[in-house]
Image (cartoon, rainbow, N blue to C red):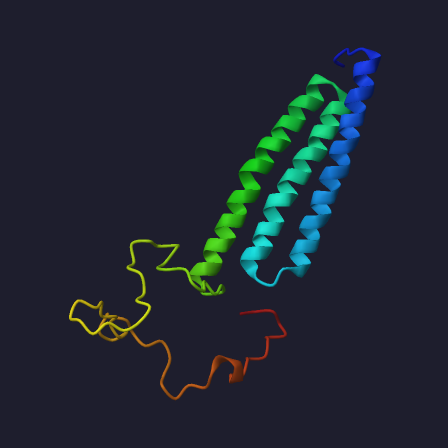
Length: 167
């Protein structure tokens, strides 16, 4: 079921759709270049979500403007909603996992952005008695995971895989 529009309005809608496709394609290309060029994980996550989501939404809008039918508009709306819901959430979860596993240098960030319940790390040593004391692993009840004489992870030998495929 096509939505009827006058011929002049249809030409304007087609022109708007053309502009949406061009801008959307440019944003998607810019996002892919950002993934290749940006130096760290958080910058790459930003490039993967912000311009890419807007680019996809513009392309979907262009398809909806060109086709002008109810089923296409419904499908375009669903694509737009799921794109807006999934891409930013996935990016935030990947960034959060990177911070938790110390894959990201937080630089000048004060405290723990993932778990704000932890107090911020002091910038310089305090001489007063109220300075927070960071317990050693044994004092905190943590077990040592490796013996003291273990070689660094980069120098350890890796076991050969089993050719039979059994574990």
